[in-house]
Length: 88
Image (cartoon, rainbow, N blue to C red; front, side, top):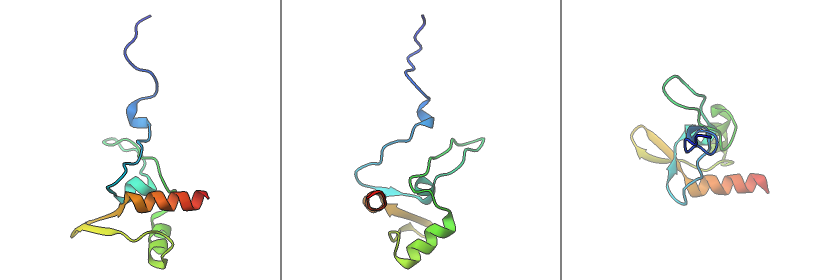
């Protein structure tokens, strides 16, 4: 039998583990459906954008960090803590 080196699903369909440190943009947290150009991004925290921003405003979700004039991100450590808090 011919082995093409594949051992399972395509890499793009698998969720990558979170890095120890760094930043995540909103589509990386809430997920994003696949398009013709880009593969789907699975949600780490499956809520809609308006719920997320309301939670940020109320303090339920972590505050973002501005990386530039039009770039908003969240610290990986804060998102990891949020996921662990909800899972507990």
